[in-house]
Image (cartoon, rainbow, N blue to C red; front, top):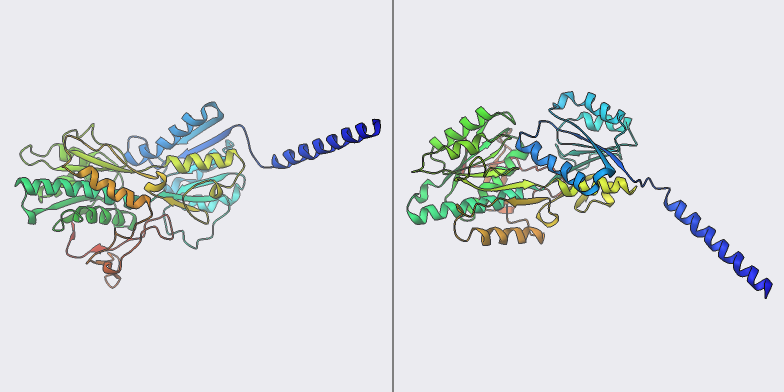
Length: 397
């Protein structure tokens, strides 16, 4: 009996040693109890784009509390990225998030293999070889643009029905920063959302050639209003266009569709709705991956292509906020919800489709026939649709 007892004890000790060895092996991952996280912003939180991005920082602090230490650098121009990046790396950051478009992040990442660099995508990442510690991400913004276009279309339809707007005067305006694919994709999806409700609607686009200038953006919106636009939207960073709408004559109100940040406080009587990219899901999941010693792409839930990730309504990477119940037209919510549900179920090919011809602003010989359809963000998180729709979109100055 003693021999059996001793053998049993030895077997248990051996099993215990195996389990201890196994858990030590598992612990070889870089899981940790705390993180030091860096954020580098291209602007400051007074602008809608950076404010919206900073909400992800707030979400990290709320989730992890004292387990995270967050360091931030604001107003960093793309060509000035190196110094703050090296500063945060020197401070011992485990992961750094960037909302700027500097190529320096990709170039400098190999020098710091133990740090994860996560940057909002700024170019076509399909087929691009990147260091294992460099990652790009972006919400599929065209989905929110299309849905906000539906809300705008419903408002225009109401105005036509009530006799305050003639059918052939259904004109929307867009204050745009630059004629690049990210901006063009967004305003095209917006117009196509409008035209899904009001097929006669057209658009005027005014480029400011800067991301952030209150004076330029407000004057651009004022010009569009003067041209007869009844709804204004934007892909720029300040409240200028919203203020221009709020200051429009009360006998001819011009409604505003926001981007990134609610404008209801500055335009309470004219702000209709806002769409935004939600950076929180990616940032939280990427930080969680580093905390648990896992790779980011096996933790982030979305459309993953190598080290590039995107998602839309289905993962909460895009959302609609601040629908103005006092301003919206009847049936707005049901129409929006139909499109959102389509997006959530992966049905996305109805957006960039119709009897339209698009022409590239960089090369008139580069055209697209949308009768065949176009799927945005199919292979990369950066939007690539860069065609101006003939006859329905006019670029003005």
